[in-house]
Length: 448
Image (cartoon, rainbow, N blue to C red):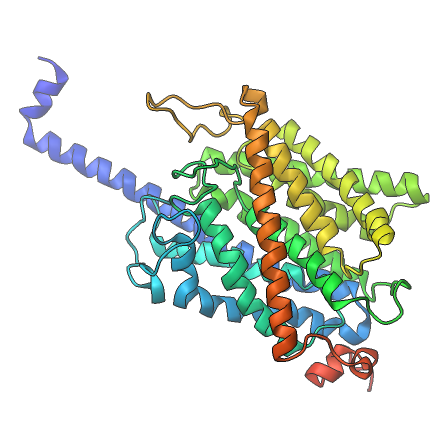
């Protein structure tokens, strides 16, 4: 008797099979959920303490607390925005440019999965994971205006920038029906696995606009030396570790794709570190710790959009390219054009994010990510290496949209904030330092 017929004649066996399938699904969901909650924690760790320490060590002693506050406060402010409207505007609805109010105040967001985005984990887990990306993005911008923006202005800027720039870009790239969403009906299929356009290009380009608008720090081009590279080193290492949650977590499951993204992330960062240090060594005669940690961050930035689409050796090529390109952006382009991007947010995130997004169109392959399928269920070619040469153009269009939104949106927000409350601290406050003038405290108590 055929097995199917025999199974149909045995209600007890059918019940056992159904129970086994349910247990399998439950186990998969539990494993995926555990990984995604851990990934969310890792991404939050990237902002605080990772980015706070990284940026904090690079400024002068009198500005370290003010600089760290620029990373810490978005953890609170952006969370409230996300709960009220941010998540809904990023992931609600299916329009090309912005979401709707379906998930406002986290209505309809619970333990049931949202099959459009992550079918094996609670939507609440997906929501809180995506929140961590929204938190770190405006914090990255603060590296450009370090040591000279008023705290009140930074708060208002963060709120408006999240609403005007981040949320529309997040929806266009990751939201259902978003203009650039390659997997959920976008008109221009742009590949961005973990935030090359959404996070790094928008923050990096906005950083450049902010640096130019605010003007140079007092005494520039005499560039002050970092006051504590030790804490910047610790921050960079925390960023490297946290980035596994950023990229591998973007698989949204404890899967083989997460493993591939994890490996690509580490290999890309390693190659970029060597690229930056090697370029610096040949250029100046000495390899520096600051160069090493800057290189690793540049590689992590560049591999972000490609991490879920490329093999390990292309990942290293992307990282190596980013290390060299970002080094010269920081040491040559910034000085040639004389803009005071204090902590090189544009040179690393803007330039590295753009380079990584373009190279994703070259090296993305369906052998790594077969999620994009044709009507017959066959994996479609992704990048140039698969024969899809047009993907490079799609990536360029995605980058151009991110650049345009960041430039126009940031310039308008800066102008509004400047008129409303003023952006820059006074000359006296800048000379005294932001720690005392803005917060009334000092980082290092030298009295016994």
